[in-house]
Amino acid sequence: MATGVAGPEIEKLIQLLARLPGLGPRSARRAALHLIKKREALMAPLAGALQVAMDKIEVCKTCGNIDTHNPCTICTDPRRDPSIIVVVADVSDLWALERATATTGRYHVLGATLSPLDGVGPDDLTIDALVTRAHAAEVTEIILALNATVDGQTTAHYITDLLTEAGVKVTRLAHGVPVGGELDYLDEGTLSAAMRQRTLF
Amino acid sequence: MATGVAGPEIEKLIQLLARLPGLGPRSARRAALHLIKKREALMAPLAGALQVAMDKIEVCKTCGNIDTHNPCTICTDPRRDPSIIVVVADVSDLWALERATATTGRYHVLGATLSPLDGVGPDDLTIDALVTRAHAAEVTEIILALNATVDGQTTAHYITDLLTEAGVKVTRLAHGVPVGGELDYLDEGTLSAAMRQRTLF
Image (cartoon, rainbow over all chains, first blue to last red):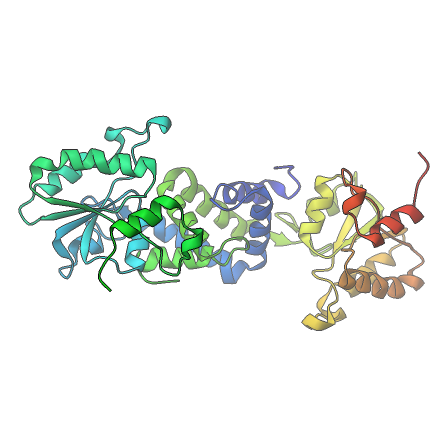
């Protein structure tokens, strides 16, 4: 990829951009050129925003969220229900739930899901911290908002077993028809789950 | 897009990343999260590379190339043939030709192609500078390496007309079958051009 055509400084920039998810070598070159052309309008602000992020962003010591405050804004928000902990695999899942304003509870970011094939075991996740938090007096419900994949469900079962003695209710997200989804395109597992968990109209 | 979920600093970073070609709002979020997770391995180097690019990269006053030297490395390279000027629309085209080591000549970057529909006229391009360069004694050939599109060919004709009195040979890239291309998938225009411009085997 790096043919040295554009000088080492630009090649370095292209190589770093190519490591972002969603950008390959070709689109990284386009992105670098775009940045160089929009020097004042885009490159300078982006360099600044990265520096600010470098300086200010931390991982919340309570929940694992990413924020400029530690503990994070959600953990310290008095309007959030301290009795509910929503367990997610990744910060991106937390962001998705927040965009949907799906919960008034607080979060716990595991960092990943258990995956024997990828060598991800319980010690790689923040499960111990979750169990500790679940034993706190004010916590009454743990909502497992994990992917409906094999790894996600394995993780959910593993955590559920560990939480039996914490005296909390452990729930998980409903399966069902996505809003706007067409039945014809849904798999059988989703359809039968949606039928079993049908609700009153 | 910006729902304020992740704090203003992260949202700002996401918004700037989303302005890169090839990244939409969703992939910009993924890229931002990836950067934050790879703080030392990726975010710090990228912030540094952008700062270096900000400080050092200039537009070559001779040819319009982008480089940390001005005039650029190609314009000052004594091994490059000063009798040939390869005219390209954009720096990305220059990079593509350099990757292919397609020429030993020097370049002239127009900045764009003529496009009446987009309001791009001759004054928006570096055509005057090209005509001046073409009159230099050592220049004998101008190769128009422009896109084989309507705008590219319009620009090629316009430049050719202006260069008639410069006493230089004006050439353009051959049309033909791409290396590795299958005839069955080529358009008729390319096929008949390839047939007309056939070469001895």
